Length: 69
Image 1 (cartoon, helix red, strand yellow):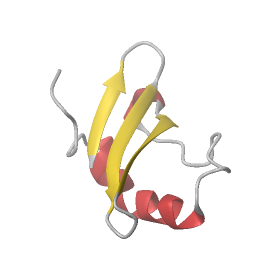
Image 2 (image 1 turned 180 degrees about the vertical axis):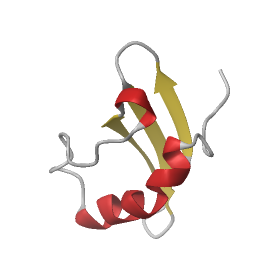
Image 3 (image 1 turned 120 degrees about the horizontal axis):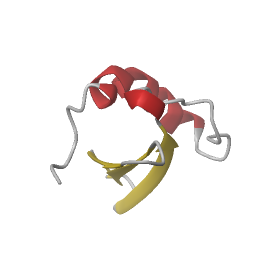
């Protein structure tokens, strides 16, 4: 997973790969003060994806996956 953060609008973009389907995907998440809100405008994402993000939330909030800019 790669994470790009946009300053000023409290959003981050996650780029990841679905290896079973052979597809890359991107999603946008609301993250004020580096605290992802997984219940904010995510109802259209698959439940499996949200469950995965809940497991990885701490690492994402701590910038483990950030792409330096």
